[in-house]
Structures are given as C-alpha cells and as structure tokens.
Image (cartoon, rainbow, N blue to C red; front, top):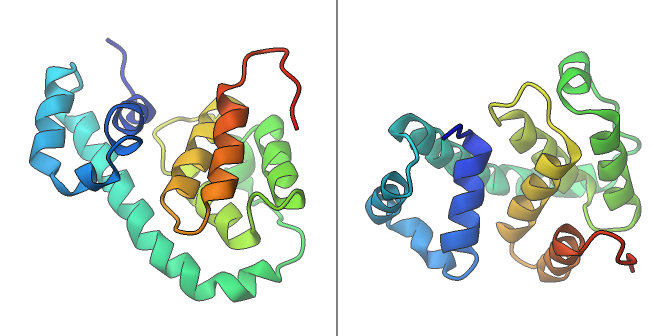
Length: 160
C-alpha cells in the first residue's frame, strides 16, 4: 500500500475526528487503529506531528488574526509557487474573496499544505487541508459545512 501523510490524515479525519472530535486525545488507541488499518508507524508519527502543529498554530494565528484579516493581496514566495499549483492558488483566492477563509486562515492553510510530504500539492489535496483547518477552528461551522459540501458534491452538481 502506497501511503502518504495525507492518506493517514484523511483516514483519521473520516474514521475518527469527524464523528468523535474528542478521539484526538487518545493517541495510543488512534495509533493502534492506524497500524491495524495498515499504515506504517513512520507515517502515523508524521500525521500526529502534523496534527499537533495544526493545533499549535491555531493559537498562533488567532493572536495575529486581526492584523492578517486586514492584509491585502497574498504574494507567494518561490518555494510556495513550486509546490502549490495555479489551480490551488486560485482556489485559495476564491475562498478568501467569498469569505470562506480570512487572511489568517489562508496562511494557516498554506502552512499546513506545505507541511505535507508532497512535492506538488494539487487542488484535491488542498481542499482536504482547507477542510481540516476549518474543522479545527471554533466558530467556523458554516465555512466548514460549505467546504464539506463542495468537497463531497457529485461531479456536475451546481455550486451555490
């Protein structure tokens, strides 16, 4: 099984966090479940580190959030441009322009996306990162629900 950090995160999200957000607190049980599902200990460890950083950065971005909410256009640096394709950057702009993400959340999403072990982050991967970031932030239920419906809609369904 070719597994990546994102595969482990998606498995955790779909099988544990979505139904029981408090399950995050029992790392040993989660780790045993992931090993039983066939994930390697190294990828599991990376996933737990990624999730810890997500939680740590929530507080960091909350502290700088007011400044970032007023931020003008986001300019990507070279290593971000190399890893985030044009569709992904355009999608982030779309989310910001439509009030789904503010500038602080946008930074949080970019940071977490770059923390994945992918050389190139495509649009589908980025959508999952956005969903996980919104899920992890209190008061973002409406934005999370919108993003969730976008992610799970059938091809050809109209967007609202």
